[in-house]
Length: 182
View 1: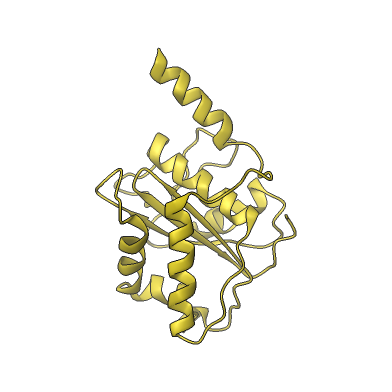
View 2 (view 1 turned 135 degrees about the horizontal axis):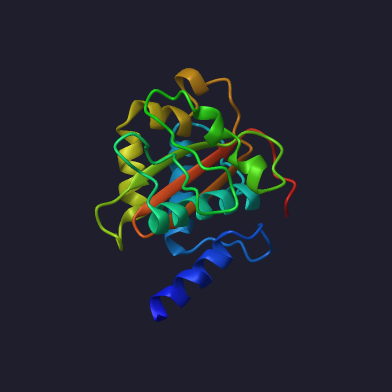
């Protein structure tokens, strides 16, 4: 019974619109700092933190941790059918990319697309999740390209970023539009 009550509280808070209480936890702060430090090494500007994209990242990390929409066909960009959003089975062929890109507009007042990179640790309480996530993304060309605007992403300018970490899941959302949500 206590577990059910806890789950209901998490769901209530996880699926609300962003507010002035959308903040980064310590791991999220560390990942935000690591991303911008890495970009600086590549002579790129820091990306302003977005309340809207952070909300989306945090909600998605919670959805993955609680509802586990990842299957043999649906990867970490997938969303369950257990929230105030459209469910999405994101497949490795990227045929349903739009279902992920539209989440910021679906869940917040953010005007543009969001582009997500995601990481999953085998440890639910990984004390080095921020560092491990970034190191993994740096060794994956598609993820690294998003972070440092290379290849398909070289003509994008990131004007907003959101960070979410929950129970071994780390999500970063990038956006071209500035976030009007203060």
